Each structure stands twice: as C-alpha cells, then as structure tokens.
Length: 137
Image (cartoon, rainbow, N blue to C red; front, side, top):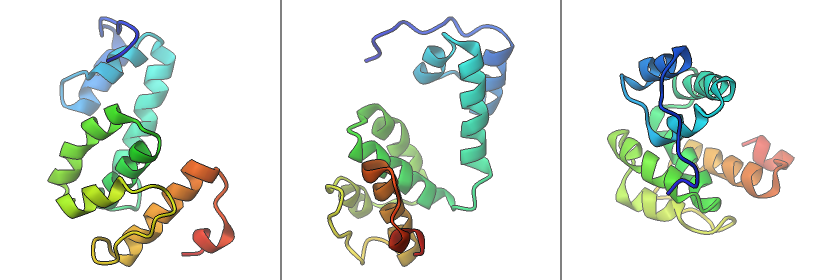
C-alpha cells in the first residue's frame, strides 16, 4: 500500500500516460503525477523500455521480475507477474526468479540468453558494477 495519496490524474501529462497505458492510470502513475515532470520523464523511460529494447517481451519481464525479487519489491512483482505470464513465462521460471542472487539458475528453466540477461540483472542490482565476465556473456 502506498504511503502517499496519488494525484487526481488530470492534465496533459496524465493524458499522455493514459495513452501509453491504453486509457487507464495505475496507482504508480497517480503517485508519479504528484510531480508531473517526473511522471512525464518516467513515462518516456517506460515507453522506451517496453517498446524500443532489443530484448523480447518474455526476457524483459524475466529481468523486471528478477530485479523486483532481489529488491523485495512486491508491488513490482504483483504488477509484472500477469504481464510475464501473458508473455509465456512459466511457473518454473517464476519460482526460479525468487532464488537469492548468486544461486545458479536451472539451465532447463532458462535459455542461455535468458540466463545471461538474468546474470546481468543480478550484477547490476546487487553489486551495481557489472564484472567484465558477466558483461561479455
């Protein structure tokens, strides 16, 4: 549950976010709209992450969920698990994402490319600096 009451969701920035979201504002959007410039920047960033990355949708969602699990961000997990499932992420993969950082991921659960993306996510989330051997995967 949010500690703050979100903004009413009116104005051009709220309209921009509604357009990106298919007509609806989510609780995160309403909180970000407490500062319209931040909400606008966040919306541009999320649009790029969702639509302009070279990652396929399932790998993108695996990475988002992994970062959420590592950081204990239950809200992020709740928001993205349904999206991940629609992208084809399996129950086995979801369970594996909850393992602690540094644990070897089940090779049967993830492709080599997914394991590389998840190792990168772990490194940048836990240690902030990605070691050369992980960067080169």
